[in-house]
Image (cartoon, rainbow over all chains, first blue to last red):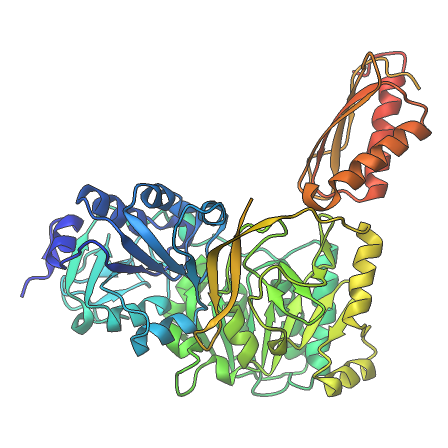
Length: 468
Length: 92
């Protein structure tokens, strides 16, 4: 059987793509992805309309999506994260139907259960053979893990692999295998390597970030979880990365042999693996070149699927085995609810990603955030959007002190015993107001819903309103 | 203080405010662009009016681009801009 198609259009025609269908994408090529735009451009040329795009994440490079929404090619959008370019248009009401936001764990859960149906899945594959055995580890557009694409490939009615590096059959180290793939298309480039992975992950020098990281690392230590068998996830952003540095130093000093590091993976996690801090890395997405190289070369650096990462309906997941996660927040309220979807003006600027999943699953969930960013208090009375419910959050670490969720009194005692600056979250809120001055909010949103944020039970957890 | 010529203070960095001050024939005119307009717009304008009054400035046009400066920063940048604008020689 011949799967290789001469053009993307041929593959889309053979797949039977029709008006009103749902097409899916994964975001491992991040802000360098060409495939989503390429497919929508082709769909527009084919005269298709009323498509729903289900993408694990939408980045600023996908701004042409807004045009396809305006001209009716796309009328539905589902994603786990939407950055500001498309987010702004959604907040301003470009779509008639609300966007559906899921988390990285709930998306594969809904796909695999059949709750979220995909007609045609597009797999952006940095290397593939003509039968669709494909991998993210090799090729000029290498991105490492293909974790988010597995559920799509497993359950979509038709699967099209789009690659810019076609190799002879069989690709021996394939991630997604030919038994799931219908068609293969070779294109000139699936992405811009400069946008796919960053060259290096930089450790922050900002003294506030370092102070927050220092407190966070001490709090993790005080929790008693930093011992042999320790498992850890942290983000790639400023303070989160610095926490990893402090944790690494403690682990090496005390010869602590951890179990695994999880998540989106940076070179810094690779350093910890190679230094012997962890036995393994479970990787759903690579953030930089060092992570891509490591997943290709180090057998202890394993690729995991999004379901295996954090699906709430899986029998067990890497997340459900996790000790400690360090996460960020754009807002956190005095009930510890976290917002990572909208900015203080109500515009969509992100989404849960894995935030909601790992926060619920980990034994200790640490939110690191400065008390304020550019005069906007991060600690607020009520978040604009509940991305992660407060019951999933254990600690908020700021440069002015650490707030412990009242549901964890034993944790508060442990931190106090370690002489850490434990403060009531109301006290942190008041400090923020004292520094920034009392705000007189004039923010007015409409009553039109432009986004539904689904919780881990796949039910609507919160809604996002259009801006005025 | 008298505003003799145009002057500037501040930067476009986060948590700072860039203030440009110009002579104005009659009264105080403030044009503010702020990332926190929805929360602090009125407060920033009030701070500027208070600061100008304390410096004895009764006529000036202010163009301010704010990226979330605290009150103390707003006062400091505006005061510096006023002092620069009231010097005899034009700053090079």
